[in-house]
Amino acid sequence: MAYQRLPILYAAADPTANSDDVNGFNVGAHWNNTTTKEHWICIDDSTAAAVWARLGTIFYAAADPTANDDIDIGAFPGAVWINTASNATFVCVDNTNGAAIWTTTMTTTVYDADGDGIVDKAENVDDGAGNASTAAQVKGAVTNSHVQGTDQGLDTGGPSAVTAANAKDAVEKKHNDINEQAATTDTPVGASDYASIYDASGATEKKILLDNLAKGKRTIFLTAAGGVPTTTAGCAGPAQQELETNDVMVTTLDFADDASEYAMWQIALPDRYDGGTITAQFYWTVPNANAGEVRWEISGRAYANSDALDQVMGSYVGVTDTCLEVVNDLHISAVTAAITLAGSPAAGELVMIKVYRDHDHADDDYGYDAQLLMVKLEFGISKWSD
Image 1 (tube, rainbow, N blue to C red):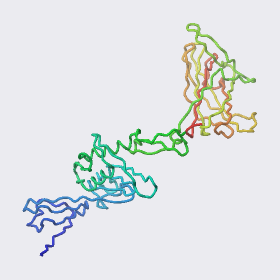
Image 2 (image 1 turned 45 degrees about the horizontal axis):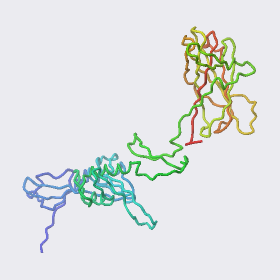
Image 3 (image 1 turned 180 degrees about the vertical axis):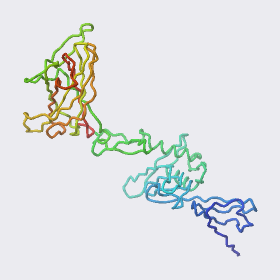
Image 4 (image 1 turned 90 degrees about the vertical axis):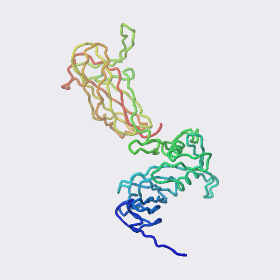
């Protein structure tokens, strides 16, 4: 038996139709592009009409590919990467150095029912046309039948062949369909239970602790009816009046224009309160249509168990609002800057809030009572529920 030694060429470019028998290449010869790391094999050595096929590459690793799994490791568009730990399969769509892009083609979920380390079954995958195949069949089809650069039909062993795109969409649909998740009636635990979210910035799904998902702002309203004028320099009220046209009942705390007058509220912030600063917004009205501005000021203090109640409030934070010059129109001020409660603010503690109209402030020049309807407090929360 005679054997022929076939050439292997290393070059910085791909083979062409002129890489033929005249130039020493025969069917079965190999060509390595040292720039792209792509590997080619000659399948027709006809003079000036040679045909070369680019060989596919499959990488196996116990982790997902990254942007650094690029041209330097021999990856090229169409290369396949199989995560041997999760059975996830990826296809390279861009092998740029340091910025490679790999697209997930499927995710399989496997089960070890008896804990013996052997996979007992794999989820079925529906391609959207009623053609169910196991995840293992899809994996085998992609591994064995995928052709680089094409969307080839995959014979998964199921009732009929599906395209690679169909298989990818089917697995993603299976993965994302909430109806496929196990139902539970357990009470969520914010510190240990997770929710699934879509991260738009990274275009990927992620999990997040319920406590972190819940972080944000919550609101408490302090009504005029719930406020108490201080004995020393207190405002007037709470006063009720009926608006004459539609018999609407309004309760106000009335703050004079010629003296600094005060009112207080006592509340307990919920167990979700994060212990940070708060902000305030004032809802008020006027009995006179004259022009002018009103300066509102607010402060507070938090009290823990066994704290003395008779202690100084925190620093006042103010906001100026302009009269709309219409009697009994609702005025809503801007939100104050951050208010730091005195004491050691914490979830569940008693909080005293003190409000006054600062008639000595340069902004305050409305010459009549400012009638406070309510104060909106906003505070941060740190966990899922109380």
